Length: 305
Image (cartoon, rainbow, N blue to C red):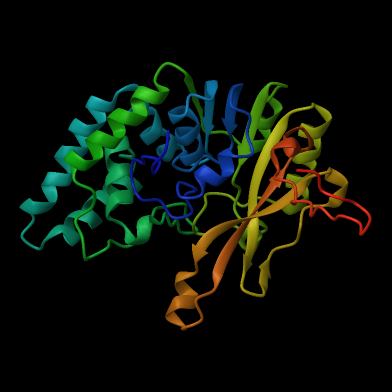
């Protein structure tokens, strides 16, 4: 099935656009897809849309985010109904939708972390980018240029995603290492952890960082258990490479996926292409395209027609 993968809401760092390239490194059918750093689960949705796996495990340490996905997949009508109420309330405020956003954000930070509130904050915040303060509270500002995704637009995408995944998906909000302990041969694990610029410290985009050495140990565990996996991890833009390569001892193959022109470079008039790195486990390296071999004929060979 071709076309852009449907999504619930704009989400910074989503692999929705890169999904067709990433899926090229997976078999046509396998038992279960496991996403320990799911975010808005773009790869899970893409795999389910092509009916490649029998079951799915969605995990993210951000529990309210997982709550949105659970509601969208298992009870889509309830989510749309509740989101519609929150979304429509913004037009009732005398001071406008910005005041309403801060009211919902305050409610969220003081305990009302309903899927509808989380979804509205994602739909209205700047660049669809989750931000948390040191106190663990959501602190991103509203995008003043728009009102967020309308319930009507949201409904068509949510209904499609529910159709692909309902009854086949397990949801968790655990540390990624606990989830990897559950992976078994026959699964494919797709990992999109916080990149190295933010992985050794707590960053406002994530509830928790990911230590590089701990992550390497977790990958080694998958190797020893014969579990296949793909990892999106850092990349390059122009001549600048981001982050340290994963150790060669892990036996992974690194490929670079074209993520398009860097918006930052366009602003600077450079028009540089961004490439995101994808690490491929041994069992999936058969899907990595091989360089084309040039055929050479010696002076003494003749071509018979």
